[in-house]
Image (cartoon, rainbow, N blue to C red; front, side, top):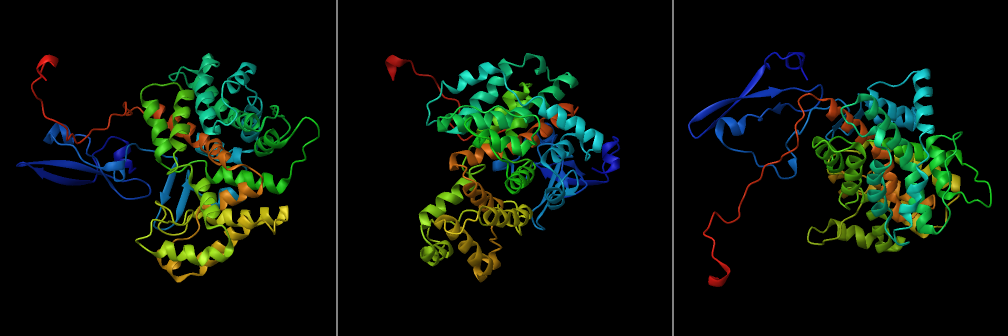
Length: 438
């Protein structure tokens, strides 16, 4: 925001709206990046009208210093840093610190932050009882919604949202315990014993070990897979005011405790139009079935009258390359090479589809490039992670962004309880008729 606006001085620009014979001034606000914003907060008071914006696609619901997206140019910034630089040169907890505190940590700050995360990875032993209450075939996201929300029943010393120290403790607990809870959901569905975290492992190593280790033998951490997981987590850590982040902020605006707020974000993320995109990619590949059927489905994708859509290509926000996809493509090929996967029909199909899409004039003209979801689904498949866990891993990454956004909202002196308006089109007031006369 311009300095003149942040220190209380009047904005340098005004827009004017005339309705029903009355003209009012609408302050024009400027951010450090992105389009200018009309402040319509006094519109109802001044003109007795609301705006109509389904999905809030043209409405800024808050001010934020955390993440910025320029969809036209294919840019994604965390606290001003391009996502490609962070994914290539940082580990996940460095980026988590950045999102939470606004700056990359120095060596001492990183050590203290990592230590605080490591020593909060265990969950209360009674929480394991929750898992036994679910059916073995329960979707892991259903389990995560319930178990994360239930954390508020165990950690009463970090529920006061007005206490800065308690907010910090809750933030650390959520980020630290999410991989443990996710791995427990996976182990429960597989009928295997839960694996406790180890304090000498990094964040992603711990996650992979808790998911794939068994008590009978030692689990050997593969550094290529760990680095792939680190990049996936970094690339998914935050993404501006998307559906789940907005849900966390909306829940938080009511004063709900942080564990309930993050559980609400998990519920929103579960939707196939949001967090389920990489799962949809795998389902699409199953539908295509084989490499020789790709031309048939490419033709269907180009037909406006055909309901078939190629999942994992293009993006609602990015009108150019998804900047995350560039990093993810490189990571995808590194993982496939490391695992020596050459004869998996589904992965061969995905790679051929990628090759065709990057060369086909239709896809180039429409800028339908493979996005981050296309590659992350392939990586998870190669690593042996079941499709039902894809969105859970997304939730682990996005917890950092949710927590950062929640903390920012709580600290904002201008924040109010969320209360969207509506355009009512139901019945006008009518006379009540008693039951015996209807």
